[in-house]
Length: 244
Image: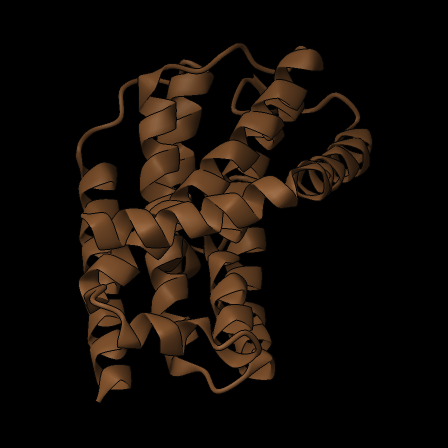
């Protein structure tokens, strides 16, 4: 656990030094999306829910995904430029401790970003403060994409590869995962695929809690836990191979 704390604490120190830029960056983007898409919707609703409320929760899920995944960029900078990863390899910190510390750091970044989006939504009167299920789904979603980011950061050979993965993996999920419009508007064949994306599973649970849309079963949290476990295992394997 000392190794986990050391890795996590380092990332939190970096985040604290950049806190003003971090908060500003995660505030501007949701505001722009809210202004643009809500203006275009012109007071429409989605299945009886005001579109602005639907959009705020979707943006919270999207921001959570992106900020959780962004820990991969931090790892790449530390790995390719500062050579921090080589120092970790020479230390008594185990591969699993390193992956867990980075994953927790990514989850915290994701959680903070969602808090900012929720605060914006509350200020606009779009949502009220959500319940425990909302935050549990946020934590699971952040963990899924943080562990995925650690795995990908160990696989790629440079920033260009990381950007390519973001283009082909993160960007499609951001627009097709129920962020800006309901998944049921897609063709039937696409719905089955999109409904099982981690952002779609989390967004459904988050909306159920924040907008009182009914009770969500355990299928979504269980699927997210399984995904997080798979990505964590693959990240640990990648770190172990890097030590050889």
